[in-house]
Image (cartoon, rainbow, N blue to C red; front, top):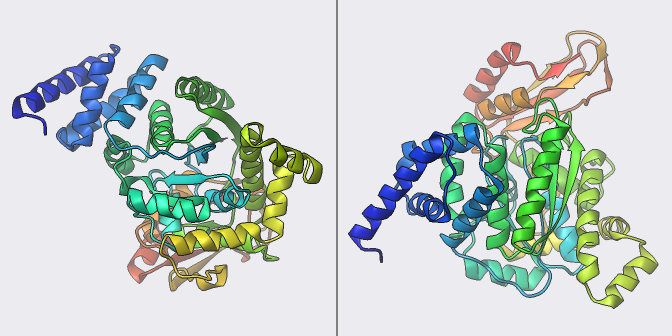
Length: 430
């Protein structure tokens, strides 16, 4: 246990470092560690933590500082260690309804690779992966439970804040969430710290960009991809960044229950499954398998080349033949959820309102910012059944009075407030 004098000295150094960063100066590793440690130990408080978060948003960090931040965030928390190839996939988020992780993890685990997935709760969307997985299984697991689940199934989908991995990150997320923003550097550090702490060796990063998501320009996505590659190299992690232009959610459901139902429909291969979500998940899973294969035993490499040609072919086989769905059942059961779990078992909020088109036309835009705002008013992610189901997507023709989307809420008050807000916060442009 630190002595009172040591605690005071570290706090003084952290405060000095924050002042230094606010005026645009660079930080040393010692200063960075002091900030991360005082945040992790909850000694800095929300106001000063917010000042630090704001300094990164306005001034940014050098590549060296980003390495310092990531290393300090990892070193001030606990770590997991798994043998061999440890696969992982992460999206920078910001796109409501794009719940590929619940499909990618069971595919990769079914292929025989370990994929212990540390996921976050919602920051800028109506549901994070941890919020969604929690609909069907507990996500607050101890280190020992995580090891047990991964040993039994090859994978897990847990909330990163449930274990003491990069604890400063969770405190930073807490102060950023109300403003619905993260700096690009903070996104980078947050993701990579969790990957390092979870022992990841092969990682695929999904970088969506578009008018109403976190990254607005292709140049921003390319810059962030370069930063991911530089940082991953320092931690000896093999990484692949996939850049996608994203103008709308991938999938139909927005909010924990509806997003989880979408993912289960893909795993079940139902006729009415969201095919755009399936295609994005297969691209990510296939890329991750391709990244892992060169370091896999030769007989596995030969088997994949002979039977499936590449990782995407292998991922498609595992999804279409039901192996991924079976693996998801194993993971849910191992984490303490009830099985079998199917998409039809998931019921969204009982209070609903269908929103109709006011004229004939074509959907030209879906505003992700407004979609997120309305879903949050409905109660997502804290109310698991709250959210929005999209009946139409960009490019589709609609007739006057045809249903565009349905609002779901767990109480009438939230539903009424969302309906009253819609005129000033339109989701669709026709």
